[in-house]
Length: 182
Image 1: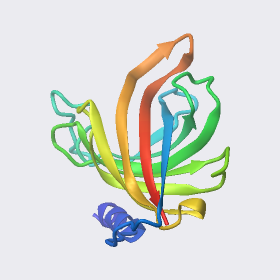
Image 2: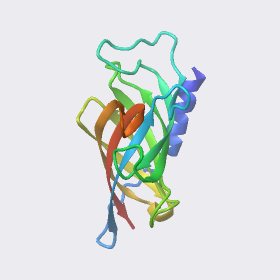
Image 3: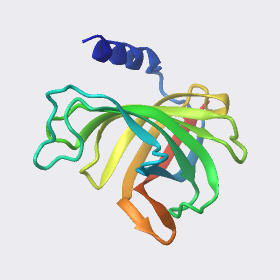
Image 4: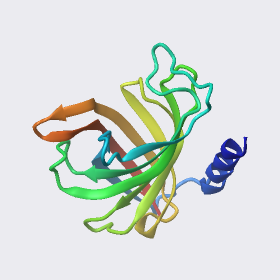
């Protein structure tokens, strides 16, 4: 019982809610990148760290209810795993829907190349990944993205991808992010 309470506490403490609107002096920054979540046995980018022993996958679902995963994924400028790396995404997701398709996700996206190198922004919300397009709110950031607000539109490019340009089995998610900066 301590693990779920601890995770919930960490989530609530990590959210940086900011209710003030962006005024006319702000700047809008659009970013497009692709997250690569690899499922390789030898070096996966996401790992199951907790699960209720009574958890079962729903008949239609992919992830058993109550599963907790942490991840450290690569962000690239294109869909191919050989595309230029522009950052990394670290965070966690919890299967919160008994349907097997709804996760609560917290993701910190750090850019490691270009004018925003070393800056990151945080998104956190429900992600019903069975929908073709999902939206996660930007709840803050650091570096050039300090006090950022905005949203990310997520689109699944492929699930369990395995082909010539993506030799490691995994998922590829397109992130089209709009940031409002002060």
